[in-house]
Amino acid sequence: MLYVLNWKAGMSKDVGLEMARRLAQLVLAHNFLKVVIAPSYIMIPDVSEIIAGSGLKIAAQNCSHLEPGPYTGEVPAKTLREYGCAYVMIGHSERRKHYAETSDMIMKKISMIKTYEMIPILCVGNDHPEESAEKVSKTLIAQIDACLPKDSKLMKGPLVIAYEPIWAIGGSKDIPPVDYIKTVMKEVRKAVYDMIPIKEENLEIIYGGSVNEHNYKNLLKEQIGMLFGKASLNLVEISNILKYSCDFSNVLANTE
Ligand code: PGA
Image (cartoon, rainbow, N blue to C red; front, side, top):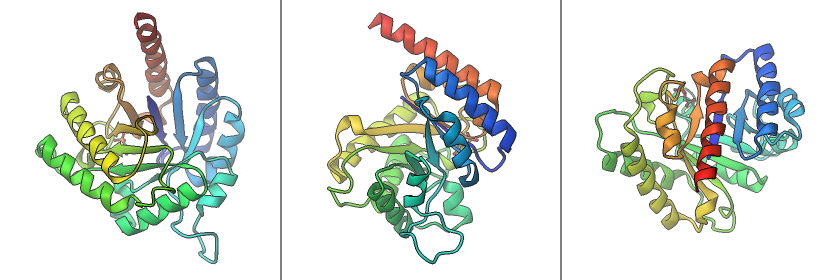
């Protein structure tokens, strides 16, 4: 089960670095916890140094769709790899909306991420809360199909898909019922198997959009990985969530 902490633009340097220190200790003590921090580009080198050897991983929040070259302001996947990123988030609805990112661009980014041996976290989502799980699944599958390179050699290995209803993003909105989320994830999983030759254990589908201390237990009970935005900016909140998740996983392991 994966936990992704999307430290959006509001994360300050001091808070972020202190949080990285504390989370590194937590993950070191519970090495089965799979936690990925996604800091802004500028914080990546410092965070990378702080968490070295802890088991915590770093994701970039974006990358260039181009190889290194004369593209002022862009950060290529190759450079992110050199600075210690293991994952890159792409296709977040905020990037699609504010930076006009197209599926074609996202596909090129995934190719770059794979070429430089990192794991893409592909974000997909629907617009309206009233849509049925079946309708949402169709929307997501179409988005994924438009973004995933179909090169089977390139696409072998791990892939993370983050199901993020656009209407739920914001930190304190409602989230869909967990059975609804499970239905969507099941349909998406089946469809991805038809698109690329990926092994079951290499495909992780997580949920994001207003996951916080009040609702994460519903997802945890179903062992659904989570992407946190706003909640990940609060050290107390995210530490409590991760500590509870450790205890829950321990109980689960002892009853199996
Ligand atoms: P949120 O953000 O948890 O604040 O809704 C989710 C995200 O970063 O996509």
